[in-house]
Length: 112
Length: 111
Image 1 (cartoon, one colour):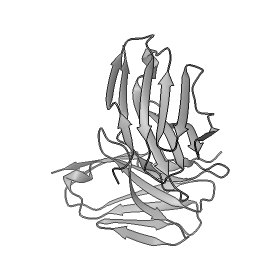
Image 2 (tube, rainbow over the protein chains, first blue to last red):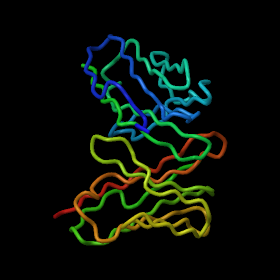
Image 3 (tube, rainbow over the protein chains, first blue to last red):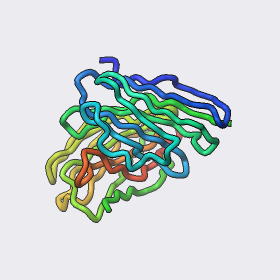
């Protein structure tokens, strides 16, 4: 298996622009997680899905953030409008029935 | 809430030295996971522990599930430069199907 795939790997955008991050989980995994990592706050869980349904979005910072999972093999995290404080590395991870999560390589977002 | 505290926060060692780090909590965990994050990459699962007292190895890495279920330990023997990175412990949240992560131990290895 190719592992969790994320795109783009790097994104540089201007404040106010819409940003869409993409994730393809490992085939057969029915849980998908979105994380954000910064030096100040460490690794934070934003939202997770089970069987394409959002289960816990308590980590989503504000209404500017939204996430969807239209099918078992694709998820998006959207920020609209983006702000400089959204600059971070965003990770997607997936798992099956066991607790072990497998992470993608991340998307490094810079908002200027 | 459930929190995982890792120590030390960072370590700077010489190549060839052994390394020990730990993860503690005030709550009981039934599973412990150890991840390593290389610079610029996502965390990679190293070892998973499922039973109190369990000792599991993965090459030069050995991890233990503490008897009290409130701690876990990771040892690296004969460190090499590619061991550089951040090591995270993690355990399942009490109520939800998500993980609680420790604050991480940053390891630097001098050749």
